[in-house]
Image (cartoon, rainbow, N blue to C red; front, top):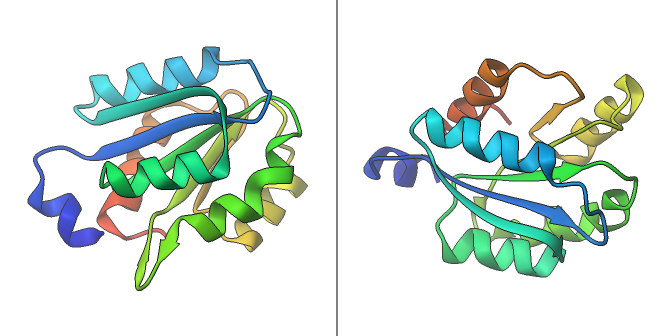
Length: 140
């Protein structure tokens, strides 16, 4: 993935909302922030499944996948998504952001293999920097 990120002009990010969570304001805001920072964003929208997110990530040669969560439902899908983002020797980094993530939940997500976690009020610059680092292979 690191080579792909360097070979392309722009970092490519897949953003989605898993399951029945319908709160997309945060995802739309992050999409706009990343686009303003010069990245290409493919927004899959609401009601995504782990399988559809993983398939899109590989089909679109994504550098990073981001999941917006504002209900606890994403936890039900997390392990399937993390497994789906690994193929042969390639792993697409996963970042999660949302209003419901507590410090203890953040630690648990990082232990599971999530590459970056953002709670409510995360600064736009913090998100952009993390995506750039993930795309370059310097986080996880």
